[in-house]
Length: 445
Image (cartoon, rainbow, N blue to C red):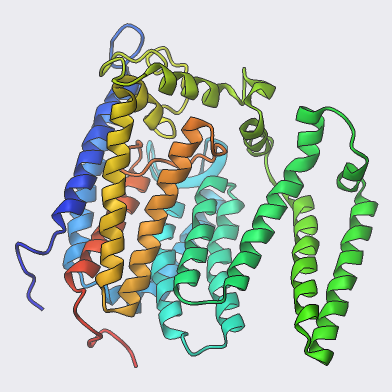
C-alpha cells in the first residue's frame, strides 16, 4: 500500500499531542527552578532529557504510523512473551526507584518495562478478542483475564500498584466493547472494589474512626475470618450445585454474589499482608488527608494549595511558590498538573483538559470509523489507557482520587511513559490511515 503523504498523519491528534508535550517541557523546566530563581542541576537534567524523550518519541510515533498496525497482530504473542520475560528480569535484577523494583537500565538511564507492557497487552488482547469471537463466552473471558493477570501479577510483585492498576480497567473496557457479558465484567469490578474496601477497613477503624467496631473483629482474628470465608464458600458451592441440578437462575445469582464476598474477604487478608505501608497510607490519606498531613498527606495537601492559589489566571509562568520552595515532592512527574494550575490558573488547567478532550474525541472517531476488527479493539484500548491516566492523575492532584503514582501522559517527566503514550498515538494514526481496509496477507485464516 502506498502511503498518502499528506494524509498519513491525523493533524488534530498530532497537534494536540505536540502542544501538550511542549507545555510539559515548559513546566518540567519550571519545576526545576529553586526559591532563588535558579535552575537546579536536577532540573536542568530533567528538562534536557525530556526534550530528547520528546524528539525520540516523535520518531516512534511516525514509525508506528508507517508500519501497518496489522503486522502487530502476528507479532503480538511474541511481544507479549518478550515483555513477560523483561518483567521477570526486572523483578530479579531491576533497580529500586521510589520503593519499587520496576526499572532496568545502565547508569542513570533507565526504562520502566511495565509502561511498554501496556501497549503490548493491548495488542495481544485485541488479537485474542478478535480471533475468539466463536469461543464460549465464559472460556473467552477467563482466557482474556489470564492474559491480563500474568503481567499484572509480575508488576504487583515489584511492587508497582500504579502501573498495575492501568491494566485492569483497560481489560474490562476492551472486554465490554467485545460484547462479553456484562455480568462477567461487573463481577471483576465488584470483586476488585470490595477487596480494596475490606483491605482498608481495619486501617480506617484504627486511624480515622479511632473506635473499635465489633463487626471488624473478623479482620483482626484470623480464625474468625477463616470461619466466615469457609461459611461463604459452602453457601457458594451449595448454590452452584443447586444451579447445576435444578437449572434455576435463582441459584446462579446466589453463587454469583456469595462468591464475590468469599474471594474478596480472602483476598483482603492477602492485600493487608502484601501492600506496603505507604500504599495503605495513600488510600487512608485519600479518605482523610488530615490523618498524617506532615508525612503521607503532605503531597495532596500542598497540591490543593497550589491549585487553589492559581485562581483564575495563575501566578504567572515561573512564579509558582509551592514548586519553587519544594513543597511539592515528585513535582515534575506525578504533580505536574499542580504546578501548571498554580502558574496558569484555572484557564491553563482548562486548556489542558480541552487538549485531552480533543485527543479523546479524535480517538473515538477513529474507533467508530475503522472497519478492521483488530484495529477497533486496539484503538479502544489505547484511547481508554490515555483516558484512565488523565482521569486518575488529575483527580489525584485535586484530592478526588487516591495517590497512585500514575503520570499525566505527555506532560509528566519520564521517557518510558512518554514513549508509551506516543507509541499509542502512532498506532491510533496507523489504524486511522488504514480505516477502510479489510484483512490482507497479514491476517491468518
